[in-house]
Amino acid sequence: MNLEKLTTERRNQETMNLDEMTVEEALIKMNQEDQKVAIAVSEALPQIEPAVHVIIDAFKKDGRLIYMGAGTSGRLGVLDAAECVPTFGVDPEMVQGLIAGGQKAMTIAVEGAEDSKEFGQEDLIDIQLTDKDVVVGIAASGRTPYVIGGLEYAASIGAKTVSVSCNKHAEISRYADFPIEVDAGPEFLTGSTRLKSGTAQKLILNMLSTVSMIGIGKVYNNLMVDVKPTNEKLVERAKRIIMEATTCDYQTAADYFIKADENVKLAIVMLLTNSSKEEAETKLIQGNHFIKNTI
Image 1 (spheres, rainbow, N blue to C red):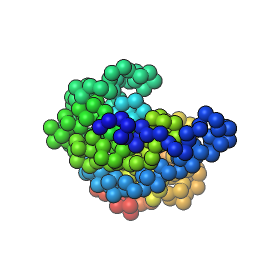
Image 2 (cartoon, rainbow, N blue to C red):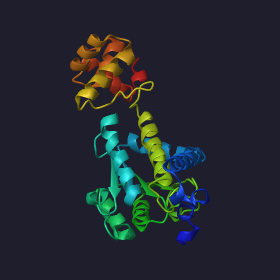
Image 3 (cartoon, rainbow, N blue to C red):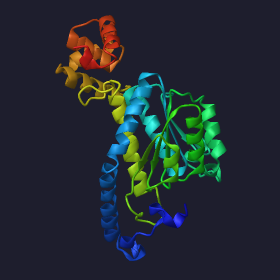
Image 4 (cartoon, rainbow, N blue to C red):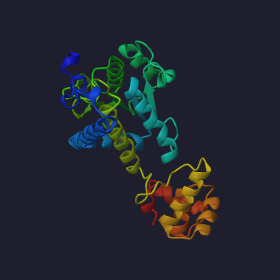
């Protein structure tokens, strides 16, 4: 596909005089363009839903969620993967982000890295991809060779594949079991896909990871019950979560937080079921780690 045919590369007729706008006018126009993104993502929900089901199934079978992309797309995947660890208390291996050019590409562009299909395959081989895993290829343009190479390799070993692109009829969609395509229109600044396209991708990745984690019991009501209290702020948040989930007072929450070895979910089950730590652990295992299955 030629670049000029891509929505993400077209000039936005609403911003042709961008360099003549006042700061206020530019901010208003940018905000107006951004508002189109959530609407565009809503139209892709029927494509996003089956991808979430596949990720949930993979997690239940000890499979992993692997994001891969180049540039902004890769950075967004790395970011979402990193945030899953403290938010849901998962092992860093469970959700991973791969970026063309490796970790140094997070801050400095690595010339030519995204143009190699072989690099995409090699990165998946390096993490020992299996048929239990799900690979999500992210590319605003929908044509990045690094991503296509990764999706091809993933399919060749039986792993499920998802693609996220910001152009309709994207090339990477042909390589994915579950293609997701969002068209939010041309960028505010021509070709700057870190803007509307990046926002659309971030929204979709939020959905893929968060709703999948809900599907394996990482959430009780709307509380992050598997949060990792790795700093003072998160310790206090953990205690507040225990209070909210059980309607107990602060001191009780603090006491059970300690009794449960700082495991928020365990503390909640101990309080809700009047159980010892050991009994609560058994209840959670029997309930597939869903708090509501223990009550």
